[in-house]
Image (tube, rainbow, N blue to C red; front, side):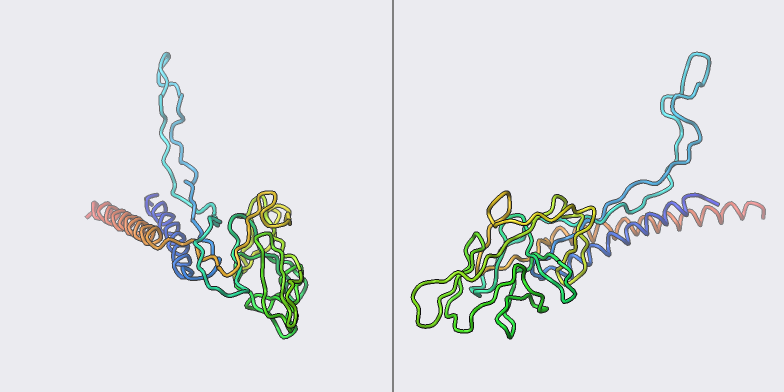
Length: 262
């Protein structure tokens, strides 16, 4: 059996992975805080028919050898945490991180998760939560009689209450960073979970020790660039077509070989 059949099939599978990744990026082009992914590949093992340096005579050696590759395989789908563009909303509870860092949230079971989506709301108790009702950590409760809420670039949260003229601090929004954000596990809903690959979470005040500052009244848009993704989609499709053509050609060569006995 011709090895090219199997080699080309690995190329088709690899390109399918790239197209699937690109499709997910495009599907989330308008998802707040979404970070695009990039499929990465490596060549497979080689069938060595002659090693480089093998003696070809008493005084000469093969300068290159003979090695035939056996295809490609996906090695990683890398999450790229480049910052997306900011969109002004003028909503007091919309917060964007300019620079590095994540908001820390708490799931109902107590699990700590992280997100770049700063489109927050308040629940029936006045607690600041995300769109799914998960609490922002540290927990901040907005007084019922608050007439104005202000969030500083350093995460300081103050309100002006009815009948008062002086602002009162009600909490502090901290952000969290990881030495390897790409190692975080994506669990959907714009949420990430710490893994051994991401490193330990380092929490701090926005604007300090490399953490980005906060911008109230803005949200961070997806960092997906449609022009780039469509180019990748075309490239992946053409590579997929080329590999399928190799399978067709190999099949025709086998058919020709089988017909030699006739």
